[in-house]
Length: 339
Image 1 (cartoon, one colour):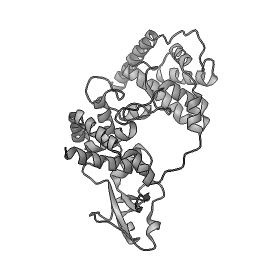
Image 2 (image 1 turned 90 degrees about the vertical axis):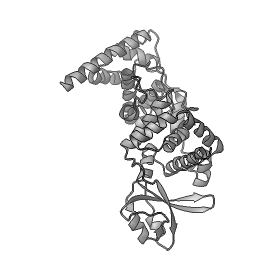
Image 3 (image 1 turned 135 degrees about the vertical axis):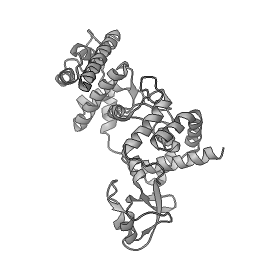
Image 4 (image 1 turned 45 degrees about the horizontal axis):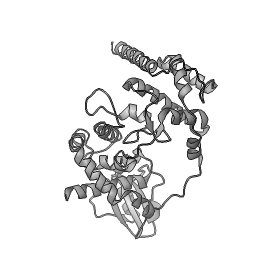
């Protein structure tokens, strides 16, 4: 019975999306676009019609309006910038303007943040910091049409085509589910969207209708964005009330052998202690940690990233990103508490 209900619901959703597509003029486009006649696109459309119940003519019309963006290919293909040390990276995100704007955002959305903290166990300051680091609280969410960005990267960027083709599928599915114009959604050149910069796959897996209006809107609805960030963190293992990081004091000639290769917490506090790592925080020996060293403004900084720190890295696979989010969150809490 549940499978029948699910299939019927998907059918109704598909019919509604087709009606929306037709009303937007996606069917029967006469002009040829960048992807008109592309064998890759034809194969993709065939998969979407076969596996997900989309109508081929509507997708043909949609992709006639999709545009190949050379600037996106240039951006994603350019050599990686020099990795900034922590002493240069931190000042990008820990600024008076980002703290002040974050407190304003917190005050304006205090009810939703309090409810998210209660329901998901994720502190309000962490949620605000994520949105602050990602888009300056919605001030910079990206101006690329999602259909253009993901079509370009799916069909014209072979090194990561499987990932971006999957995200293109997810984009079409979410527009059908949310009944939105598939040409209207905008985001980063890589397809990340809204205040929290969710990829379409993350949207479908973790985003929530936190204000209960029947739709999930992370583009212009801070309440849904707040609930969605909290949902993501909870689903990735955030533990309410647990610490995030611990500054370590180190001594001896085995210290650097304790550093983690990558972000996975493959060592624990006890193992690090035997290598010369100590902390003023009370930590059980069996706590798994990601151990890292930053080149700070006043010299080397050794840190133990605890399980909640690892959860932040699941949002963006970078220890410096996770530390920037955490330290911004602490500044936001201190600033707001002192008001």
